[in-house]
Image (cartoon, rainbow, N blue to C red; front, side, top):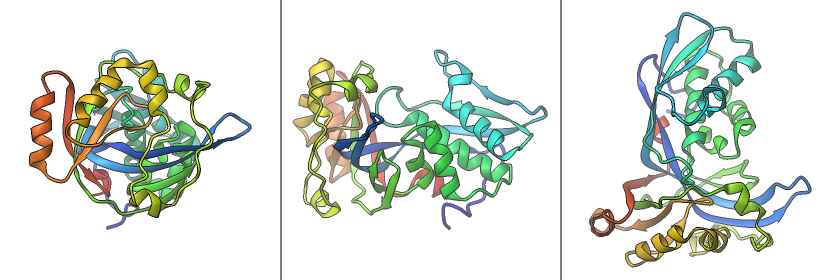
Length: 283
């Protein structure tokens, strides 16, 4: 079953998975200020969950919303209203959110919630928009939304919108969320951020070129991330996802990942999960 012909149902809970950036290179900057990137996306089994219920009115209502985010600013509500405005659909929906992914962690939680909303309502409202059209709508909401609509592990370039499906080893993952919130705009504005990395190929990534150009700047600004990176590096190569704050390490076996978590969980907020090349939304 492809991503585009899966049938969704009212009232059922659907996942909005986290993503990891297994590599992130900044290879240039456009005149409008946007950075040109090379990155690799892979999903993990850690998810938010959303359910969609009919609404007698034409309003988009988000129930049990996040307390410090205005509903009008929430990407879930914005995604649903974008579909309505772009297609002329006049109905409404009640959306229930079970939030499990940490906010401001670089795991793409808000973007994933928005993508799940686009995909599910496209089906429930019978809008019959293509995956490419939904990805284009997603880009209007945020640079990370299209990958979640795409639904497969991918090599991405440009500002993240040029996506090529790849297959990666699906390993066990330990994620640490330090007690800080990284300001992405601050990191991308930093004078000492590397903006001229040499472009690499997928083969070079597979051969081990997995650096994140944001890492040194992030560690300079956020001491907790540097400490977490050191602690996790004892067990496996620790990396930063996006601009953080989350860091992660890949493990060849569940037992090795569990061993690391047992050691670190009293000191850090940890998430033990598994990488997956196909988004749980489409499996």
